[in-house]
Image 1 (cartoon, rainbow, N blue to C red):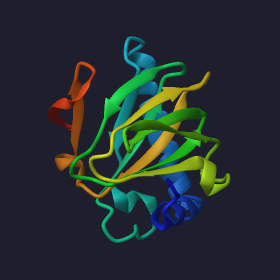
Image 2: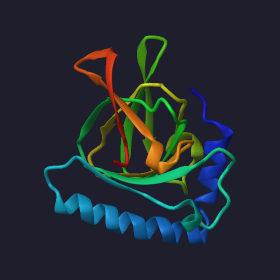
Image 3: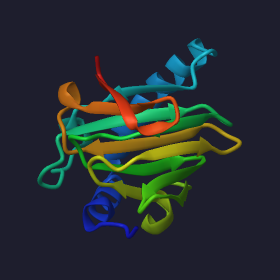
Amino acid sequence: MQLDPIAVELSRSLKSARAGEALAAALVRVERALLARPDQPQAWEPLPLNALGFTVPTGIQSCWIFVLRAGATFGAERHPNSHQRTLALSGSALFEVFIDGAWCPWPLSGGVAESESGSAISIPPSVWHRIKIGPENFMSVSFHTAPAERLIEETPVGDDLAVTKQRLYHA
């Protein structure tokens, strides 16, 4: 997988002062939510695109802030109705993407101030991905081509990727 130009543009745009302020405020809220629920492996919230202070690339319809708990492992999921671009803000994670019948590693670390190549991943619609979090909480921002209220998460039933269930992510 190669880093796509939209992920590079998003990474550069997130370096602006206004975007940094919006991300910092959202991360405080999301991290507090995670701390309040020690039984949960993650916390997240959608962030209005206009809060970022820049014009997002054509096709981007939603933005999500995530804090994933240190050491957590997340099973396979995919978004059949959205292209996902995730950018690391802090911490590290090993994304694995299912391509041509095999899980391919894509490590992310650092943040948008770092090199775009190691801090972003682009996952086309309906591509399976799973994540293993490093030794500290992983904070990230994900951009989707589906609106927040219509973003679908699809997960396998058991270990069979051919048998799935779907839900709205922001239900």
